Image (cartoon, rainbow, N blue to C red; front, side):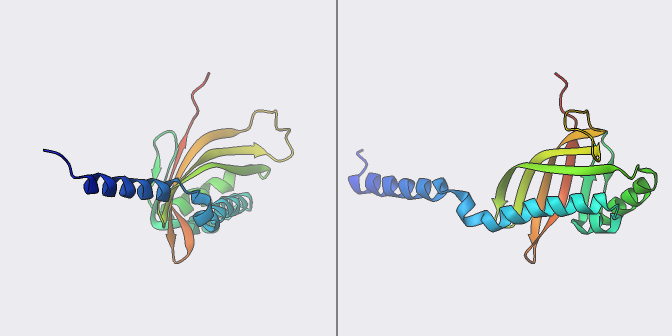
Length: 161
């Protein structure tokens, strides 16, 4: 049985339009969200550097979570805020938090995954000095009422080479 030529032509045009729709530069449509996600990381660093646990907690959804490389899991906004309130009491004042977002991937218009690095270092220390703490991070964010909130943060220690 031969496939009618019209079906083959239709499928070809359908496939071509599907491919062109997904080959467009996603940055053109999502530039505002990419900028907003990057700014959220900057604001998170700022809250940490001010030792403002309440502001840090506000970046998370109510049921957001934060997992350390040890496996310890902070299960919601309140627990995250309490953890950092306690941690800031004994933390040296010159520690600074530096987040670098390396990649953002959108799973939908209001859900994104960001990968990057986290460094906690003493203020004023040269960049070639080993930081106090360094980790890879993956964050899942959700846009709620036009604002990006953290749903999940996962920290991982890079494999030693």
